[in-house]
Figure 1 (cartoon, one colour):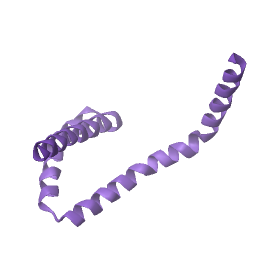
Figure 2: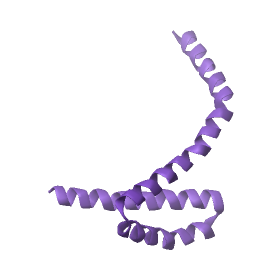
Figure 3: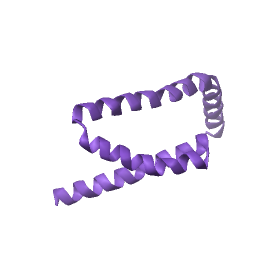
Length: 97
């Protein structure tokens, strides 16, 4: 049961990672670049399965760290707008009470 659960978790995780990568590349760079991702992703899965686990985790940590940079930039840029909208929301909440 544990092996079957692990297998299903792995398969669904790989499918979701492929999908999110495809959608993100399609949004950022267009359909032609996203189509190439369909062939590159399985190659990375095979390479990842063959490498040592410490190297795989290091690469994954670096990739995840790089993905946070655009989010942090967006948070800093959008902070004034979020603050303004939050104040407006709570003012409306007080008026409704």
